[in-house]
Image (cartoon, rainbow, N blue to C red; front, top):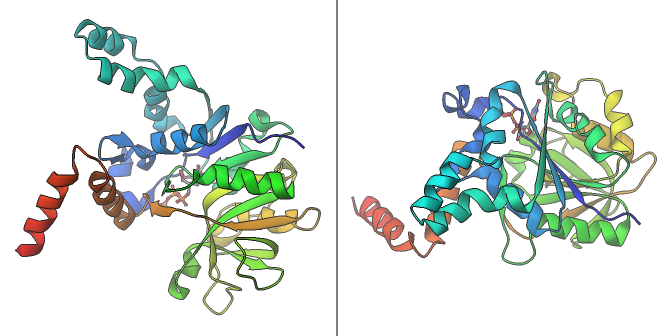
Length: 291
Ligand code: UTP
C-alpha cells in the first residue's frame, strides 16, 4: 500500500465572506495572533508526516508564495542583530519542507482547484487540507488521524464533524452505510449543501481529506453542481461507484477562518493558549464583560 506523502492545500478562492479584507489579501493569510492561518495548516501537514506540499493559489495571491519562501535581506538583518528567535521564525519553515505552487486560472470551485493538483500528486494517495479550516487537536494532528484511517482501510477518508441541523446546508453531508457510533464508517453517499429535509445525517465534511488519485479522472468530467461550482463532493459521490469511501469523526476543534465568527474565536482561543498572551487576553475579556 502506498504511503500518504503529499498534501494539497487549495487557497485560490475569492473569500467573499471576508470582504473587504480579501480584496487585496488572501483570507488564508489572516493572522491568528501573529501567524498566518495557512502556516498553521502547513505545520499540521508536516506534523502528520507529509513530505511534499502543493499550495493552489491565483495570480492575486502571490503573497502566500512570498511567505513560504526565503527573505534573505530580512534573514541577514536578523542575523546581524543577533535576533535568533525571529530568524528561526522566518527561516526554518522554508528549510524544513518542500512547498510547490500552482495556479487555478478561474475560480470554478473546490473540485476544479483540486484538479489543478493532478500533476503534483501523480498516482499516489494524498491529503487535502482546505486553506481556511484551522484545527487544534489535543491528541494526534488531524491530518495524521486521517492518514492512520487510510492505512487501516486503504480507501479515501473524509474528515467529519457533527453540525447542528440548521447548519447542514453549508456543508457536504455524509450518508453512512449503516447508523453507527464508531468514528470510522463506510459511506453510501455524500451530498453537497443539502436542505435540512434532504440531509441524510449531521456528519459534515470538515475540510480534511485523504483521497485516492482516482478522483482526478472524475473531476475532469464533473459538471457544475451546487452554487454553479465544480463540487469535489459530487466527484467523491461518483468515486463510491468504484471504490469504498469512509468518513472519520475528527478529534479536534475546528475554526472556519473564512467566517468572521471562526476568525474571532480562533484569535481569542489562540491568545488564551499562549503563555506570553494568556493574562493579557484574560484582562481584555474581563474588562469587556464588566462593562
Ligand atoms: P470556500 O468555499 O470556503 O472559499 O473554499 P471561497 O469561495 O474562497 O470563500 P467564500 O465562500 O467566497 O467566502 C474552501 C477552500 O477552497 C479554496 C479556498 O481558497 C478555500 O481555502 N478554493 C475555493 C479554491 O482554491 N478555488 C475555488 O474555486 C474555490
